[in-house]
Structures are given as structure tokens and as C-alpha cells.
Amino acid sequence: MDQHAPDARPRPFLFGGGSSSELLRISSILRKETVSGALLVVAAIAALIWANSPLAAGYFQLRDLRVGYGPWHLELSLGEWASDGLLAIFFFLVGLELKREFLDGDLREANKSVVPVAAAAGGVAVPAIIYAVVNLASPETLKGWAIPTATDIAFAVAVLALIGSHLPGALRIFLLTLAVVDDLIAIAIIAFFYSQDIRPEPLLLVLLALAAYTLLAHRFRRFFGTRAAAWLILLPLGIAAWVLVHNSGIHATVAGVMLGFAIPLAYSKSGPQPGGGLAEILEHRLRPLSAGFGVPVFAFFAAGVQVGGRDGVGSLFSNPVTLGVIIALVAGKPIGILGTVWLLTKATKARLDRSITWIDIFGVSLLGGIGFTVSLLITELSFGHGSNYSDQATTGVLVASLTASLLAAAVLLPRNRNYRQSSASPSASTAGPGKSSRSAA
Image 1 (tube, rainbow, N blue to C red):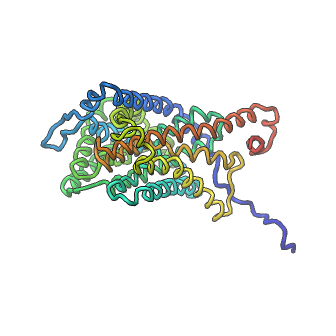
Image 2 (image 1 turned 60 degrees about the horizontal axis):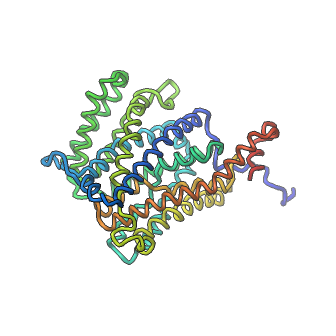
Image 3 (image 1 turned 90 degrees about the vertical axis):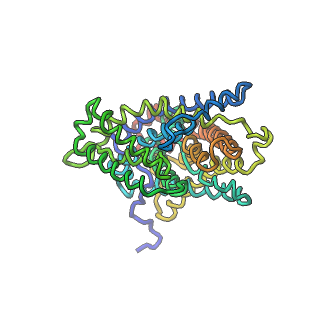
């Protein structure tokens, strides 16, 4: 037997194209998130212009205006209502998406989930380490280590939809799944590292409210599919759970995730079905509210900083908070994501799917550096609302997100053009699997 003969066993692929139903679902999400991302950017730009105009005092007075009921610890500023209240709707939808991914998406199968899960973990660990190294000398600024760990789903997916209409479906599925896992890690970070003064009594009541909410949602899912029933019964229970979580010392957005997980998916005899049922109905009703109002309003109140912080534009690249956030998001995210995927190929002797190349993975990993919504939320949790460190970190998040978007566009736009030309060429229809994409490499 020839010892130098090649191994006849086929090498496994790290990426797959996904099922047709999964690709349709991803395409639908891309279309919706394009509008959401555009509104988010418009709101952030409007806040930046107002906060740096001669009328800036009016912006900060509006952001810090306090309303609510004090005895229930609900007398909050408008900025806090946006981050604690409106973002709970966003995280409710994240909870629905997480449940769908775990029960019916790529996270259900270990061979498909290992890549995005590992890449998300790498994309969280490396930026956190980079920020910590840059801020190692200051215990006060070191508290912001988690700011560059999050990827903004709406923003990143919107950029991909604008610049990558002809990119392989495997890349789109990878980015969405990566961002979903990234959000799950960010939620865990918020729950474990940014909870303080935990009070057990509200937590026990939360469990009762959540149990009642879950039981009713599963037992009477058809009944709550009607337009009024969910608003009259599930919504008050959900608000009660949110208030109790807020009073327990855990950040209130965690309540949104728990409530999203409690909603049942549609089932058939063969198991969970993509979309459908009460989960799809509630998502259909709440996504316009979150994408069209909740997230843009949060971005409006969170992004309004005087550029460069209180020390002026000259300090933008000199203070460790801004510098740490920018380096961690722009460089740390792609290093963590791409490096993890590369290590998987070496550890498992797997290879990329024939439809994509390493430069494609690099472009998508750059999109991971768009850390807008959740990064701004963690900024507030780390440094408080309106502090000097908060302004510096927010400036870093905005600069890094814009830079990551432009770098990803520079890498993926030529790739998208090549894929479009390859798919339109007469030889593309007769080429074997992956040959058209390889010719575009």
C-alpha cells in the first residue's frame, strides 16, 4: 500500500449553505433590518448634530428629564426609559430569535452551530482583552471592558443587505447566527456583571409572573393569536415582570429576553416549524414598534455626545477609553472571529464550503465590529449616564462602528460584484458546485 497516497476520506466543511427555508428566513430578516438600520443611523446623526450645536443644552435637558412613579423606583430620565424600557422590546425580539435558532435554526445541530458559537466567543474574548490591556492602568476605565464585546444585529445585517446582495447564503446565515449568539453572550454579561444590589423578594415574584405568563402563552396560544387578547392579558403580565426585574437589581432588558423565550413556536407532528404561531404573530406586531421607534429613540438619547468628550476633539485618539473601544471593535472583532474559524480548520482538518473564501469570512468578521445598540447600553451600565467616561466610550463606539462599516464595504463590495458577474456568466450554470465562486476568488 502506498503510504503517500492521499486520504480518500472527504474532509468536512465548516460552512454549509443552509436549507431553503432558512435562506428565505434570512432574506426576510435582511429586508426588514435594512430599514431598521437606516432609522438607527438617522437618529444617531440627529442626536450628534443637536448635541454639538449651539442648542445642545436643550438636548441634554430633554435626555435628563425625569418622569415616572417614584415609590416603584420608576422615576427615570427619558434616556433611562429608552435604555431600560424601550430596549426591553428589542430584547424580547432577540429572545424570540434565540429560541427559534435553538429549536429550529442552525444552533439546533451541533455540526452547524459550532462555528458561529465559537466565532462569537472569540469575537467577545479578544476585544475584551484588547480593551483591558489598553485600560489596565486605570481601574475606573477598566469597568468598560464589556463595551466592545457586542455586535449590533440591526446595523450589521443592514450593512450586509446593502453591500452584499449576491454574497453566498452561507455568509448571511453565519453573520445572523453569529450576531444572535453574540447577543446571548452580551445578555449573560449584563445579567452577571452589571447587576447590583440584588433583592430576592422581587426576584421570587418575577418567577411567579414569568410562570403565569409562560403557562398562559402555551396553554392558550390560539386565543392570544387574536388581536386584543395578548394586549389585555400577556402585556400587563409582561410589564409586571419587567417592573419586578427592574426592582430586583438585574437590568430590566433581561426581562425582555426571558419573556421572549417563554413564547411558544408553532409545532407540527415532526417538531418545531420555522416561524408561525404566537411567536410569529407577536414578532409581526412588535418588530415595527422596536425597529421604527424603540431602537431609534434609544440611539437618539444614547448617541448624543459632544464629539471627543469634554476635552475636545484633540483628545479623541489619546484617551484610553475611546482608543480601547475603537481598537477592540475595529481590530479585535475580526481577529477574534476570523482567528477562531481558522483555528477550527486546523483543529478539525475541516475546510471552508466551496461557495465561499477566506476573504469573504474576513469581510463578515469586519461587520462584527459594528457594536452600536448593545455597546451603547453597556456603556451606560459601565460609566453611568452622561459622565465623561461615558461620552468617551460612546464616541469610540460611533467611530468604530462607522470605521468597521466602511472597511467591510471595501472588502465585500468587490466580492459581491464578482459573485454577481459569476452568477450572470453563461458558464456559471454549467459549472460544478463552488466553481463559479472559486473563479471569483
